[in-house]
Amino acid sequence: MMINVRNPRDKALTPILRFLTQYKIAPNMVSIAGIISMVLFGIATYLHIYYVSIIFLTLSVLADLLDGSLARFQHASTEAGKKFDLIADGITFTVFMIAIGLAHLLSLVVAIIIIILQIILTVKSTNKAIASTAHTGVQLHEVQGFWIAISLVKAIMYVSFIIEIFSSTTAVPIMRLIAIFILAFGIIKR
Image (tube, rainbow, N blue to C red; front, top):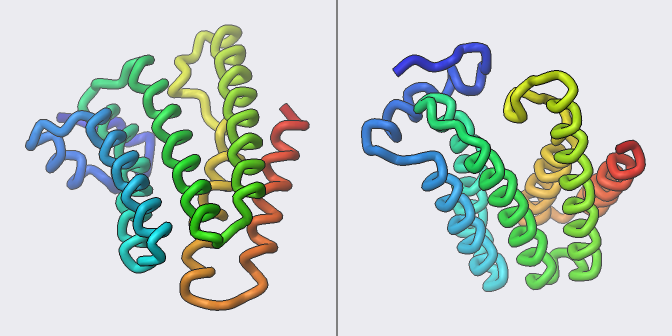
């Protein structure tokens, strides 16, 4: 099976994508595995078993990286699959935020505010991407840049969790404040 090498991530993941394809693992299966991993992360975090939490967080992030690449590799990219990927990403981030809120690593109110801001920005970004594709004729999965702020916020929140687990630093609240500003700015800008 040939992969489109225009995406460097896809090219780097080719051995893993071949392995998954050989065992008939579908992209949506990977997305579901990511959701399950994040739910297990949530349980481990709530129980304060942080080393286990980090393992499940890593598995969920890897699933998020793999599902789209696997769909392109298997030439199985569909509009329904792209929508499912967006939904899966939203679910995993929501579970992450609720878990750290319930584990008292972040105020639950702040976690809910971040979730709401992330949902608003996702909807606005998706609508803008859809409008852009209507004018250009480009396929939705080929549109780049509309979800960068959301991905950046996720990365900041995931890294802040890991830093919080391994050290006591004032960087974590600052990182989370930056994440909130990025979401708010993204909403205002859209």
